[in-house]
Image 1: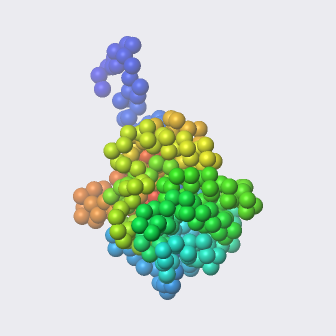
Image 2: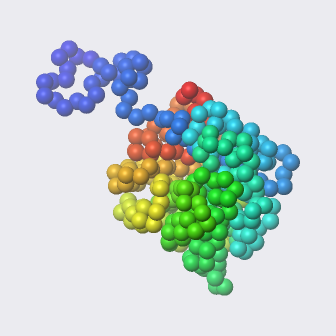
Image 3: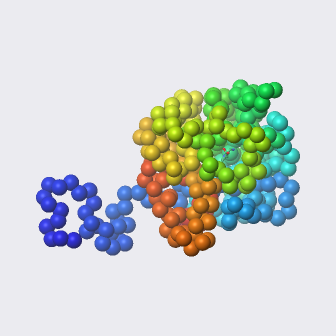
Length: 333
Ligand code: PBG
């Protein structure tokens, strides 16, 4: 560092002098990953006796009800802000009947966690049909095999109420159907759950990064893809902002962008455009690529994890859903 640097009047926001030591960098760090802003996703599978490893996501398992209770308790003890549940039912059908069955796996797991953890954490539930349908699409289909948007909304409304009854504090519709937030808000209010919040997957892209999740949740589409309802990765942020504005107008309480790392521009635009909390989902493929590279000794695992989470926070996410939530929260506290 040269004496007299920077020249008078030159706009240097953060002189290198402030980067000299870790304590100085920490003191002036403008963003920080908060344990309380991290959400731990948990997969709960019906009809298994032991947790099942997910091969494409080393370190992630499909839980039994019992192991989900333990994982949720450790997540909360580590200081995460919440958990989000995904159900993997034993039986799938064309309308995804298990999704709103009061005895369905997610409802049972939500009730377990509500009993164990009560008001100590935020219980979120992914609200979609793809884990429950035999065809693997996020909605019900017409006879010709297209997504039937409005018939799907009726299913989402029923699922929201079932999840709220089971103890969800936040439902998170992830199917990208038109009008889903309004339909869910109305159903929750009518059923006496005006206090249950909606975290809308507002800007969700048709992404290759969901690949490993489809193993974990056993929900790969059996034909076609999700490109007719999820957003085109090539679309500029204006499309995302339109989806976000619609969700906000329909009553979303939290808006989400997904995936995270490849969509930092979208997170940043959404954060600038709305006053509501913005969530970002660091999805399965983002997890697996770091784990795979780290397992090969190609990346420093812990630093890479923190760098990605810091970048997502810097882009403007208040809440981050990440498979590393518990581990990172432990490290932060
Ligand atoms: C749909 C849903 C998906 C993810 C979360 N909710 C899969 C999809 O849209 O194909 C992906 C999450 C991840 O990849 O970690 N219910």
